[in-house]
Image: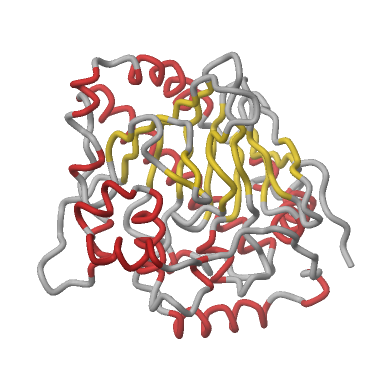
Length: 347
């Protein structure tokens, strides 16, 4: 049985592109997917635009309250927009963070009679044109990187390079997050598995606070590595691989002295994937992955994955449930019946 991890592996993205270094890099990536669920990705080529993002994020949060409120998430059935400090919950506790949520530019295409989860995809709200331009450039460049990374993921699992392309969703998401100083041990964001797609690509500043739960129930620090993106498996990919590549529970401990900023990008998964389709795809994928390359490891205190639950017909339903519970004010306004239902149910 594999031992649990105590550090987060570092993988050089350029080594995944070179014929000379690719075999070893793919083996490193495979080990990270099977055994950790997290990795640092360096030399991605996105350093410049990510640095631009970090330079502009403090200015964004220093906008006048009225500028932030005009794009409050309460206006959006897609759960896009500004969230004030203390308006989000994770693991039944209030998160001490302030944030802006954006998505791949889309028009509102939902119509009466469509599945309700289709309302999750639609237009973003921006406080100004400068932010819109920056967000769209970040999303586009992150999307290009993510597509290439997905190909490497398939290769390291012994699958055709385009295996996971059909599972890509329509709307990726990007956040700007501010964690203000708080009392020691405060929850920046509580223990969770990312429910918003296939993989998450996170740029964190120099403050730190991200922690990852290993398979024996220990919290492992994921300290900042300059120029890197922290990449982790989300629930969509865990489900598609039948749990062979599990998402890993993680959290952010709030800073005590200095503001922490982060920029996560969430690679979208198709919301219309049903459980039956998922079982078929997972069976095909797991048959192609050699069993000896996928060691079973124990998982203690890991958060349950909604995407693997029979309670939901498709990924869209599971994702909507997560959004409604995490943002109760938005859920009550746009999905009152679902809010009443989900707030009474335990998961």
